[in-house]
Image (cartoon, rainbow, N blue to C red; front, side):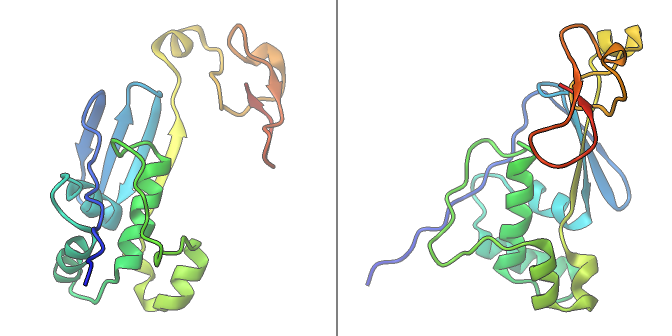
Length: 167
């Protein structure tokens, strides 16, 4: 009988400024000039991405930490968000039996009572030091005219729906 080998996620550690708060973790990525706020669940998963801890073990540890049953699906959801925020060292291959689902679908499956356990990574683009000093808006920041954007950027609509941003 062959066993499926689970990937062992590893968190990025280079060029990150990390600030632990009571119920969340703030991470500033000096490479991408992005700030990320990880809620308690996402931060717990990220802290356990040490390259040695499996997704199954993270689910067991999180169950103990939250004092409520936690599925591997919830851990995979957190890993997906961490990967989108570029807080993992490399792409994490998902096993065939793990289907990527939306936050809404996960909440429906787990129930409203489990909503507080849902991992959440909120990200914003932060201006570089030069952009902040000049008063111009950096890439990804909301704008109303090109004059507000830093040199080399224009104010326009992103490829996906949304308000105008400097790009």
